[in-house]
Image 1 (cartoon, one colour):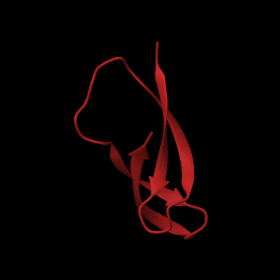
Image 2 (tube, rainbow, N blue to C red; image 1 turned 90 degrees about the horizontal axis):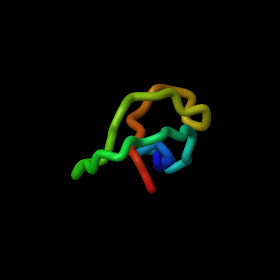
Image 3 (cartoon, rainbow, N blue to C red; image 1 turned 180 degrees about the vertical axis):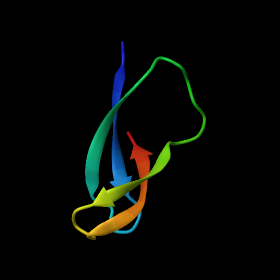
Length: 49
């Protein structure tokens, strides 16, 4: 079964994206650069539960 997680903007904290995670256990949270529609620029987005 796959789990869902949200990606939240580091600057404003809004949860803009959702992703599906595999069954493998990771110790670090996923971080990637995505466009935030509230900040109106590309910012880092971090995985939240």
